[in-house]
Image (cartoon, rainbow, N blue to C red):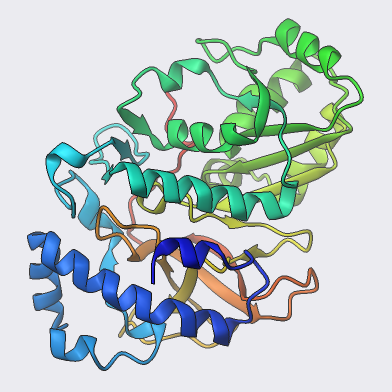
Length: 360
C-alpha cells in the first residue's frame, strides 16, 4: 500500500476498527523500511528487542515499536541519503535546549502537506480564504531550515488567498495593516492562524491594552503550540476564546495538537472541545510504569503515530505529554476515531512549545 491510498480515506469517516486494519500493514512495512535505511533506528529496535521475527507477528497498532521523541534532539535520524534532503524542520525549544531536527525529502514534505490540508479542511472547509497570520514574516527567512513556527505557517498558508502578517519584525501589532486587510475583505470569511501564546500576548493583549476592537465576526481562528505560559497566567481555554471574541468578534476557534517531529499529522479540536485523531494518525496512552496501554478515561503518556513520516523514523513516537482518551467513534460531533485531551507535560519533561520560545 502507498501513502496515497491512506490519504484516499475520508479524514474522520472511518470507524476505529477499520482504520486500524488499514494502517497496521502499512506501518509494519514502514518500520522495516526505517530499520533498513536508518542504522541508528535499527540499533534502537535491537535494544528494544524488536526483531524481524516479531514484525511478522504484529496484530495491533499498539505493538508497533515506539521511540522517545527526545531521540531526535540534535538530528541524525534519517532514512534518506543526504542528497535527497529537501528541507529540515527544527522543533521549538528554550535557550540552551537541544532541538529536534527532522529531515524531509520532497515526497514526505508533499505528503505531510496533503495530510494537513485534509485534516484541517474538514474543520474550516475546502476552499481558500483571506489569511491573517498572527506572526512576523521574519520567521520564514531561512527556507531550508524551518522552525516549528515557520513550518506551521507555511503549512497553513495553503488555505490562504491573500496572506497578511499581523505582527511587525519587533512583534508589535501592525494595526493599520490589519485594518486595511480586513477592509479589503469586508463581508468575506477570514481565516486566522498563529501560535497560542503569541496570539494572546502580541495580538489580544495589544488590542486590549490599546482599547481597540477589530471586526472579524466572519473569522475562524486556528491555533496551537502549547498552553503552559497561558496556564501560568491563569488563562483557561474558555477564557482565551471569550477574550478574543470580545476584542475581535471571532466565534469559531479551533485549537490543535501537533509537533515538528510529525509535521502535518495534527489533531484538531472539534466543536465539542475534543482533540481528534484523523484517519491518517493515531494516539495511544501508555502507563508510565510499564508502558502498557491505558484504559479509556485513564491518564497516561501520549504516543502518536503518523504513517506520513517516511524520510525519517518518526512514525511512532512516545511524547513527553500526558493525556486521556475520552472515547472512540462516539463524539457528539459525529467524527469517527479516537478523541482525547492533553492534560500537560509529564513530570521531569523539558518544557517547550512553538509559541513559548520567542524572545525579544
